[in-house]
Length: 356
Image (tube, rainbow, N blue to C red; front, side, top):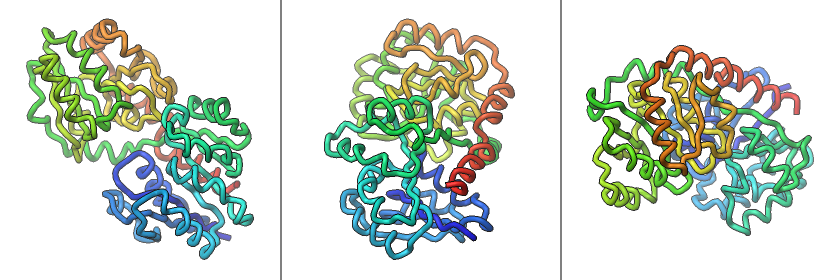
């Protein structure tokens, strides 16, 4: 007996949740599962990576707050065995209505440490209904503990599954990569990747680099976002000639492959894919010690280390130390592969869905 499962996402743009759902839908064994993906709008680069036998249900509703009714209509019509909602705001709205479908199991996958990420009171209200889900997937211990202590989620509802990393895909991308033109051989090259928003803490990273001006160190920031102009202004004010904003890059692995160090400056995370990917490229990482599973990814001295970024002087020192130590790239890759490979994590998802 096959289980039908509907995954719900806003779109298939290139974000963490979208990548996870695409990977799960592609790899679930077809003798046991019939996966489909319900999108609020059928767009995004991951559409190209989706297997042809995964049905896409397009409800053509750009605004999340208007999506609830069409989502409920589709669930009522299709009567799936499982509904898997992979996006915080949709999870919140949907939690009130799970009881309308007693024969369907509902799973919510959280993407962030909720108390830090969800600030709007009207959204936080819906978390009162969260125990209505059959299971809630947290990506890290920090997320799990946050849901228990701040939202009174029952422990038996929660399942921790870390994010997977697709090592084959990354190896392929790296093999096609040449050294980026802006990577000077006279400098050590540090890479940071993320949305240019307050959450990612690039303002703090620029303050750290203000203390490294006289060093032969370049900082390459990959990503777009609403804080771009503010950060560029800050770069000018601090006189940071060795900091380059590259915008969003289709192949970030080209930069990671040739990086001397990866830095994660976030104020909080869910379970940072980019830290996994840096490790999969064999790059040592220095991460801000913030909530969001970073302490589950980093094995101190093996694939990276943690420090408080707001102690700017110390963090700058730690960057210098990390850049001039010898690291074992193969060891870094192995530490990621042995814990977060696609095969290990997908097995956890498959077991959860099958045994629900």
